[in-house]
Amino acid sequence: MMVFGYGEDLIVVDAGIRFPDDTMLGVDLLIPDVSYLEEHRDRILGYLITHGHEDHIGALPYILPRAPAPIFASPFTRGLIEAKLREKRLLATADLFTVAPGTPLRLGPFELEFFHQSHSIPDALGIAIHTPAGTIVHTGDFRFDGTPVDGRP
Image (cartoon, rainbow, N blue to C red; front, side, top):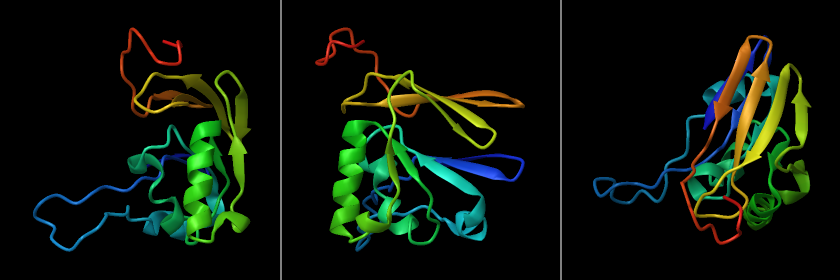
């Protein structure tokens, strides 16, 4: 999970869980500390999700009730998020939006540009985050794949 801010506005990229290591007996999963998001919940413009692995979407059911905001994800990733939120009875209150590579999105001062990436899960995205102060390129996870299953390098 990464929070970007400009002025009073915030965007959150990914909201995942971490799995415990061998020393954490009895712990099922680790959830990010969202106290900052709770304190600034009215400033969050959206959650931008790069792909559907648990370390990128797994914390959403735990975070959204405490710091709600719209969620933006690719079609496949959105489907995984919907299933997760439905299971926790949170889907009806969630605002989910589908994004695609090449489709621009503006959230407050952030101009977002999504781009395709190869990864071990379909529909992975990177995000160019344009702000008045400069551009941040957030890749999420990716891999170099000379023979991607979907034919899109």
